[in-house]
Amino acid sequence: MAVLNYSSPSPPSLISSFKNSTSISHLFTVPATRRRSFPSFRIKSSLAVESPAASGTSNGGESPKILLQVKDLTAVIAQTEQPILKGVNLCIYEGEVHAVMGKNGSGKSTFAKVLVGHKDYEVTGGSIVFKGENLLDMEPEDRSIAGLFMSFQSPVEIPGVSNIDFLLMAYNARRRKLGLPEYSPIEFYAYIMPKLEVVNIKPDFLNRNVNEGFSGGEKKRNEILQLAVLGAELSILDEIDSGLDVDALRDVSKAVNGLLTPRKSVLMITHYLRLLEYIQPNYIHIMEDGKIIKTGDISIAKLLEKEGYKAVSAT
Ligand SMILES: Nc1ncnc2c1ncn2[C@@H]1O[C@H](COP(=O)(O)OP(=O)(O)OP(=O)(O)O)[C@@H](O)[C@H]1O
Image 1 (cartoon, rainbow, N blue to C red):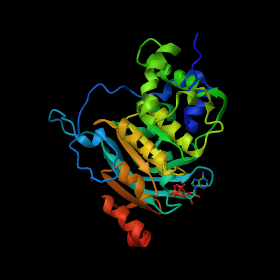
Image 2: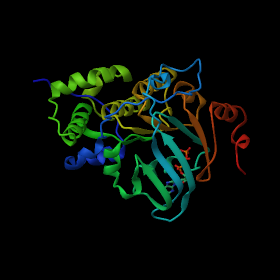
Image 3: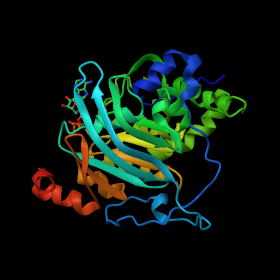
């Protein structure tokens, strides 16, 4: 009997779920039952890696749907009541890629964590609607089931748990949710192998414990593998480019692009133009002091690179 081991980095929410396997079903997303394509207006770049989402396949004339609508969102640190988010507004349609940039400490990660329901923060005002439902009414587990995935800046290790076991359990929880029979390890192996290729991860990675001893770049790739297995509709990627060498950055970007479909969207946080040239966002937002103060295209990132944040600051 084959013992399958795979690797995959995992956000804290996934890890805490793993520890309680009865609640692991929240790791999964509702399957995409309809395919729609979104007219692409991505900025083309010579650096761009191939992106199916950017190709704008036919959607049969359907209008794009709003996936996430954030209005006047305010949030504080739960423990200290220090205000961090001070009125965030953002709208993401299906199939769109959005990037959030901003100075250190401007609130980008907090925004991402508030979206997934991180317990360190308390929402004090505004609204978040995801696929037509009030996200603020949902527990973090339910947000995950509804189709939100977040990769964290520093993926957590799970000693003693192999990647393959972790991913198999997570994937089977999804299948249970869908009323489908669980995959055997062999069936799962067939399912995951093509995904390993997309992410450019060697199969022996799956035998290692989740993130244990992984280099920074390996952890990031593992995050994307996890994303590929779970198939979220909105992937929130917090600085997936940090600590990556040039080849890894290209691989990870390619993998993210490989996961995009006309229905799947990405919200990525980054400090660097390079990532934006690989994963061409539809919109780039600048966050300052807990608010989005500017929205534009790649030219904003180019301006930042050249002149720094003073060029786009509201103050
Ligand atoms: N759990 C917390 N406890 C205390 N302070 C926090 C917490 N979370 C966020 N903060 C503070 O809130 C502010 C915004 O932090 P956040 O991590 O959202 O910024 P960021 O824009 O993502 O920064 P960076 O670019 O450095 O990652 C910072 O001053 C940070 O110290």
